[in-house]
Length: 204
Image 1 (tube, one colour):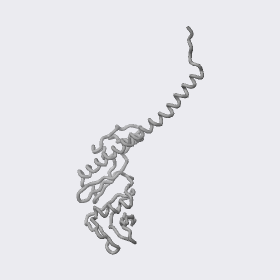
Image 2: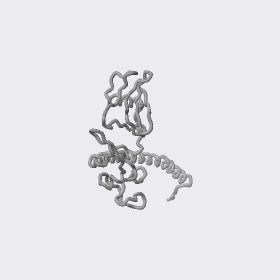
Image 3: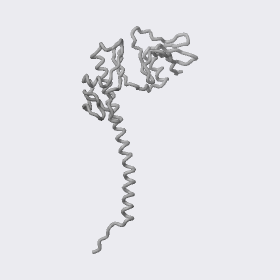
Image 4: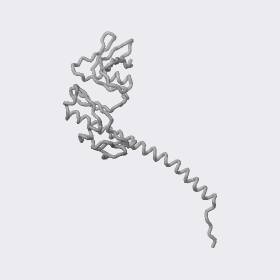
C-alpha cells in the first residue's frame, strides 16, 4: 500500500488560501468590534449625562448661578457613576477608580460635563459635544420655543424672560438666544456668547 503525502505545491496553495481567508476575516472582525465599542461608548455617555443631571438636582448649591462643571471622576467618586476599574498603573491613576472608554480603554475621569439649570429642568452637556442641528432646523426650533408669530422686518420675535433659561448648545458653543429677526426676507436667530454675537440662518 502506497502512502501519498501532500506535495509542496499543495501545501503552498493551502497556505495561500488560509492567508486570503485571514486577510478578509480579520478586518471584518475588527470593524464589527469597533462598531460595538462605539455603541457601548454612546450608551455609557448617556448614562453618565443622566448621572450628572441627578448630581445637579441633588446638589443645587453647586450652581453659580445657573451652571457648574463636574468631571466624570467626581461623579465616580460620589458614586453617581459606576467605576469600571480600580486604580492601576495602566489606565487609571485615581484612588477611587475610573470609568473607562470602551473604544480605547482610556480613563474618562478627566472629561468635563457642563451642568445647567433653568426654571424647570437640569441638563448635562458632554465636553466638546458638537451640535448636529442645521441652521434651518435651529431657526425652526427657536421659533417654536419662543412661540413666535408674524415675524416681519419691523417686528422681530425677542426673548423677554427674566431668568437665564434661554441657553442653547450649538456647534460646540453655549449660546444665549436673543430672538428671531427677519433680514432681507430671511429669518435668522440672534445668539450671543460671552464675547461674540452671531446670526445663524436661514429659513425663508
